[in-house]
Amino acid sequence: MSEGTDLKELKRRMDGAIAAFKSDIASLRTGRASANILDPVTIEAYGSRMPLNQVANITVPEPRMLSVSVWDKSMVGAVERGIRESNLGLNPIVDGQSLRIPLPELNEERRRSLVKVAHEYAEKAKVAIRHVRRDGMDGLKKAEKDGDIGQDEGRSLSERVQKMTDETISDIDRLLVDKEKEIMQV
Image (cartoon, rainbow, N blue to C red; front, side, top):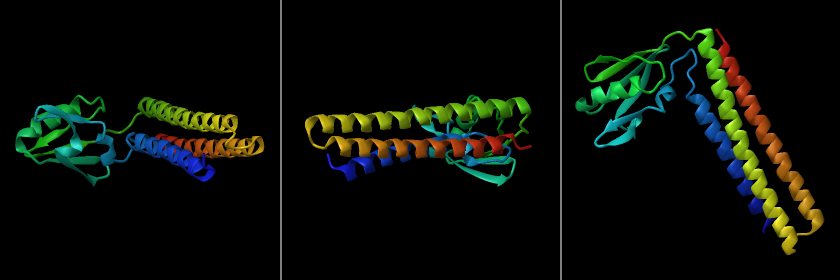
C-alpha cells in the first residue's frame, strides 16, 4: 500500500462527503430565493420521473420569487403538479408556459424545523466521514499485519488519518453553524 495514494484517496472521499453536505444544505430554503430549492423536485415526464431542471429552466427574478420556464408546453401541468406535491410548501402560479413561485415568509416554527433538517444532513455527512476513516484504519491494520508497513509507520499514518477526520468534521460543524445562522436570521 503506497502511503501517498491511500491518504489522497481518503482525503478525496472525505471531500466528497463535504461536497454532498454542501449540496444538501444549499437546497434548504432560507429567506432568500435560490434555484437550488427546487433540486429535490421530480416530474412525471415522457413516461419516467425526471429532475425538474431537465424539463425547465429555473431563474430567480426577485429575492422572494422563482420563475420556472417549461421547455415543452405540454409539460406545464406536470411541472406544476410536481412542485405542489414536493412537500416544499410552494404554490406555483401558471403564467402561460412558465410558472411563478412566490416564496412565503418563514415563520419561527418552520425555521426551527429547517435547522433540524440541517443537523440531520450534518450527521449523515459525519457518518460518511467516519466510514471513510474506518476504511482507512482497516487498510492500515491489514498493511501492518501483512508486513507492508512497520508498526511505527502504521501508528503515524493512523494519527494522520484521525487528524484528517477531525479537520473534516470540524469543517462540517462550521458549515452547519453558518447555515443555522442564515436560516434563523429574521
